[in-house]
Every structure is written in C-alpha cells, then in structure tokens.
Amino acid sequence: MINMKWMDKLKGTIKVNKKTLLFFTILLIIGIIAGSIFMAILSETDKKLVTDYFNNYISNIENNKLNYLESIKNGLFNNLLYIIIIWILGISIIGIPIVTIMFFIKSFTLGFSIASMVFNYKLKGCLLNFINIFPHQMIYFLIYMLITTYSIFFSLKMINSIINKKNMDFKIMMNKYVKILIISVIAITIGIIIETFITPLLIKIIIPLIK
Image (cartoon, rainbow, N blue to C red; front, side, top):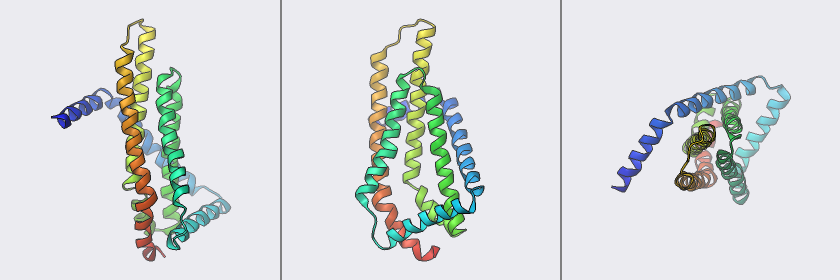
C-alpha cells in the first residue's frame, strides 16, 4: 500500500514536471556530446596528461594501491556537496540558471570521461565505460535530475507566488523538499559505496582484456 502511494506520487511528479525532465534529458545528451567533442579537440600534450591519469588509475587498481578513504572523501565532496548546493539554490529565486549550468557541467564531465576511455583503450574502452557508468553513474544522474527538477519547480513556485501575490503553503512544500534531499543523499551515498568498493573490483577483473 505504501509502495503504491509512492508510485502514484512519482507518476504524478513525472507528469507535472515532464517538460522539465525532458529539457534536462536533452541537456544531458548535449553535455555528453560536448564533453566527447572537447576530448577529441584537445592538444596532444593534454591528451597525454589524460592518458597518464587513466593509466595511473588502472595501475593503482591492479596493484591494490587505491586509497579508499580518499575515494570516499572525494565522492562525498563531489556528489553530496553538489546536490546540497542544488537543493539550497532551489530556495532562492536566482537559482534556476545556476542549477541549469551546474547540471550541464556534470553532463559535460561525463561525456569527457567516456570519450577519454575510448581514446585510451579503443573498442575495449567501451567495456570499461560500461563498468564506469553502470550502476553508480546512472544513480548519480537520476538523482541529479530528480533534485534539479524539484529545485527548479520549487523556485518557480516561489516566483509565481511573488508575482501573482498568491499564498503558498511553504511548510508543506518544504517538508516535501526536505524528503527529496534525504532520498537524494541516501541514493548518492549508495552510489559512492558502489563506485569506491565494487567498481574497482570489476575493473580489476577486466584489466587483462584491455591491455
């Protein structure tokens, strides 16, 4: 019964915000393409730096030299801080353009990462990309889209209330907004754990295939 209620709420949210979700889906695709193109036009010196970075990462995994504590810290900083900033910006009226730019930058970074792996490991890089994206990156971007959509929805509601001088039940909206943040934090944390402990193990298994 509880699951049905959550499904109904989720369907209602998607229906109300489908235009916003479509916009950010398109923006995600554009960002990935732009990141891939940027990798292609880098100078040979910059490409070598990228190659050295990935080779060092693979070498650390192969030789069990990964710093898991550092990886978790970086994951928390890069992802949790991101969604918290997006969440806070939703409360501000000026947050919409900033939130949009931040989402594009994340998409651009993902595209750059995908293109870098293909550049370094050719067709074998596709297998590495799959492990690098599924499932933790999918979790991240689903949450990014969720928190971004709600952030913009919250901002628009506030703007509409101010312009049309309508009363807004701020308490109810805020309670729902806080729940979205909690769900996002939990999901992102799960993604970070997968990225830190499970993804390197999977990469280690396929290292012989990409060499």
